[in-house]
Amino acid sequence: MSKNLYRAIEVLLILLLIGFIVFLFISHTGGTKKRVKEIAAPVLQSADLSALSKKSAKDAAKTFGFDTEKEEGILYYANDNIMDCSELLIVKLKDEADAPAFREAVESRVRKQQDLFKNYAPDQYALLKQAIIEVDGNTLFYCTSKDANAIYEAFKKAL
Image (spheres, rainbow, N blue to C red):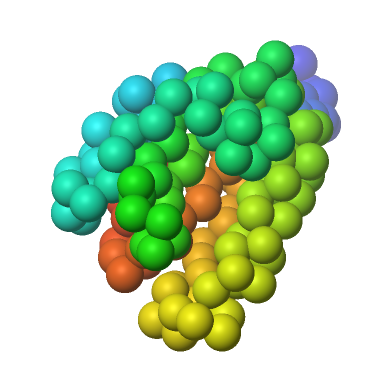
């Protein structure tokens, strides 16, 4: 075989490799294949959540107005004291296309809580103003807590 043929094959293989790498970067949009329980374990260890009570998926659906048919798993902790707005929510969705609707439901909840706490519980209002609401592909994270940043970092590592 001639040098030109070897050179053409070499260039073609390099282009195919580059194309494959670009495809991998474009096709990965975030999220996780892990179950919510796998994500939850390090998140729950990252901060003291003893003041919060574990709630059911139905509680989360009622509180946030979620369609539970669209989720694969929910972890929801909230404070039973109505004067404390602390909450932790992780939702794994069946389809990441549903993430904007779930995010809007959480944002709506936070706005309503802010309206409630604004005039009579400034410390809780401040927590709500610093609430973390993030979507990573098929996974939604929401936290209102003094330790929200540490909890969020543990969540990102758990993905």
